[in-house]
Image 1 (cartoon, rainbow, N blue to C red):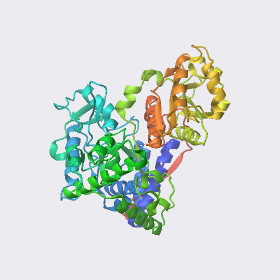
Image 2 (cartoon, helix red, strand yellow):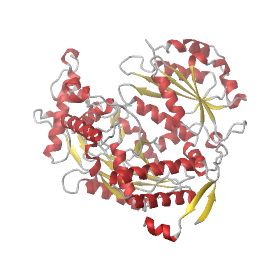
Image 3 (cartoon, one colour):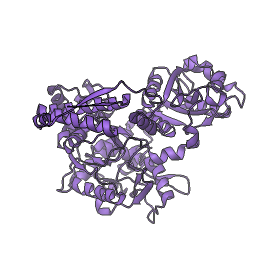
Image 4 (tube, rainbow, N blue to C red):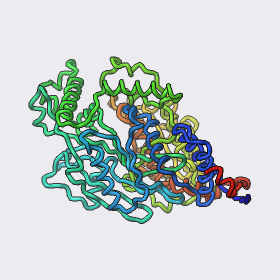
Amino acid sequence: TVLVTTRISFVSERLLRKAFEWVDQVAHELKWDDAYLAKRRFDIESEVRTRGTYMHTEEEIVHGARVSWRNSAKCVGRIAWNTLMVRDRRHVTNLDHMFAECLEHQRLATADGSLKAVMTVFKPRQPGTRMGMRFWNPQLVRFACYEKDDGELMGDRANKAYTDECIAFGWEPPVPRTEFDVLPIVIEDPIAGTTKMFELPKEYHKVTMISHPKYPKFAKLGLRWCVVPTVTCFTMKIGGLEYPCNPFNGWFMETEITRDLLEPGRMDKMEAIAKAIGVDSSDEDDFWRERVAIETNKAVIHSFRKDGHSIVDHVTAQGQFLAHDMREKREGRECPAQWSWVVPAFGGSTMPIWHHEMRDFYVEPQYDYQAEIFAVRKECTIAEEELLVSDEGGDAFEKILVVYASVTGTAEGYAYRAKKLLRPLQVTVASCDTTNPKELWSQCVVGGGQYSAILFITSTFGEGMPPPSAEDFFKSLRSLPISALADVPFSVMAIGSSIYPDFCQAGIDLDRALGKTGGKQLLPLSKGDELNGQEDAVLHWISSVGSLFDLQQKQALVESGDSPAEEESDPVSVDMLSDEDEKVIA
């Protein structure tokens, strides 16, 4: 037996802990024998102590992808998690070859006429790297959005920024432009410093033309939608490793497409469809929006099934989720579920799932949303080298102050969420009612203080007013002279509900007041709508802030043990196995 003594960082120990927890879980669920588990744990520990990371076996990556889907609290269709086809393509690093694998992914998803759930996994992020391979586009098939000469938008409004970025990168939209032009795919390799754009051939982006069995004018609108929803904006976390580039598709539920067609932030076809089916959009007593939504649901289901494409209706989907939830309980597992996502947009309390008890919690393996690379770079208004400078106090990483203004506790909760997600940045959370605007400048690095930036999260109360606890803060801020907050880096996240006419007004006023007193805006004002993905908007904002401060690079430094803020652990003794021991394990 050879005794090897090594010194590793605390976070490397944490990586080992996560890796061991994962292989223990795999061993339990896939019924490994004890000898194989012991050998696998030994191999992982040897790798981590040698090079700071380790590599999953194909069995671990396949099961990890499936369990990540099983743990995804926002997905209603997890009943098929164990049938996910996982394509291990970690060896593919050439961008052209990666695009070819994306085409093969699309082909396999519809190979035999029925839609199959498929994931293609590319290589994980390596220690010491900032991001790893990334897609710019949130899905493989997305429709462009253009601004017309009269200022109106045409196409999928959710893709306006990505459309502009593609055009700036060199994409030439088809002539004439339409509202259903398919955007190109952009893949970036930050390590090699290369980015490539690829046009998606027509045979790989199947679409269904939307018609209605009862209203012929519906088809004349020319509406359509893609058949395969292949998502590319997730980072998959398994056993302490991160996979930032892994296209994944399930299948559509009809209410998803209905919302995409109707909502103002997407295709905005509510009024057009109302005219096509003869509904008076001026008669609020007729519940015209609900009528339009129901008929659009019917049209989507009718069209997909007529063309022979897989789709699930919301009644079937909720029944499948309830069955999945019961299966998980029988296996001794609690099923994480976010009520606002799992409960279908239609049916309300007439659906059994409406009354089903569920709890939203985070567990790994998991899919995490990514901030858009191009959006982070475009919104950054401070040079990167400024953001990477630590304060003069000698601490390893920047200190951030997060100030919240809350009535119900939602903004406060998001503030503490930001503190957790922005680690290892040193984040302090404070309420507006304990914060004096007159002291903000002196608390920041520019004024000789400790904070590199100040983040604000505020709700709106009543008719566009700040929360009562923040009234004095807002009043004092407005009274400050023009240069009182000169060059203080700040960003504002405003939350509220678009049902009110003064949506996010307190945040708008706060952002304006900070700018008027000389503050330096890190990111444009962000808004989170309670009725339309508020949590996602907040998480995107936090991710954008993290990217400004090179958060992933700092996390990698901590993981590699190179961070001056991390103290090395006590020496760890590792018994290297003798030949006889290896025979026993084998």
